[in-house]
Each structure stands twice: as C-alpha cells, then as structure tokens.
Image (cartoon, rainbow, N blue to C red; front, side, top):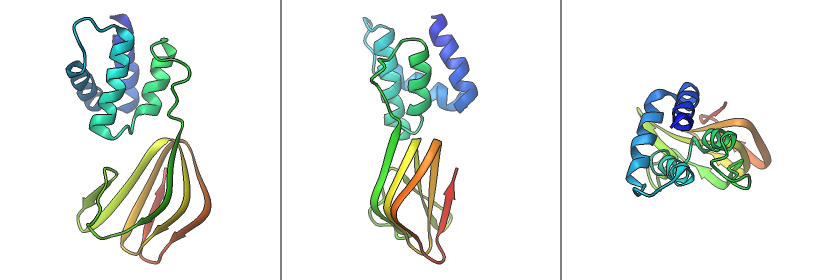
Length: 151
C-alpha cells in the first residue's frame, strides 16, 4: 500500500489532487478482487484515457516506472498532430476540442508533440501542451485572427 500512497502523493503534487482522486476512483471500476499492483497500474492508465483522453499518461507512466509497475517498453513519449485544419466551426468536434465563450479551442497534450501539415484558421485557437518538447515540422500555418499557444 505504501507504493500507492507514494504515487498518489507525488502524482497529486504534480498534476493536482482533484485529477488524482478522480483517476483513483475510476480505476477501481476496472479492477477485479484478484487484481495485483500491475493490474491496478494498467487500470489507472486506462482511467486517464477514459476521463482525460490520456492527457496525463506521460507523468503517470514515468511514476509507475519508478516503482516497477509498468514495463520499460511502455512509452507515451510522442503525440502526433498531423494533416489537420483547426477550425472555428462547431462541426467535427473531437475529444481535444472545447468551446470557451465564442471560441473553439483545440488542445493537444503529451510528453512531446510532433506537429506536421497543420493550418489554424481565423477564429480558431490551438494549444500545444508538451511536457518535454514541441516539434513543428513541414507545413504549419497560423492564419490572421487565429491563436496559437505553446507551453
């Protein structure tokens, strides 16, 4: 149990207590009464995919690797955002899109983000939130009246 307490404390300090609590609660719906620590780690990662589109997997996997709960081949290091037009219309909304006031915001999160062949149309906003790096390669266009934020 010390492992989970340590993970909750470290992860909660990094990503916020509310997110951590929701992930732990969701994780329990995915477990059986004979599940072990590695099963729980996989369920925790699946919970992040279910609730937050995997936005926190980079940090989660790193924390679990520190405790030997996921294999070294598990890697969520690169998120590809390619061949897309970010638009301000409300059609074709995906899990990365949300409305704030009158503006559509598309947020892409990951350990590292690879961006290729992307156009941000006027009135649209794109947030690129990489824990490590954002690589913009090939064609990339931000039209007048569009917004781009890179963290």
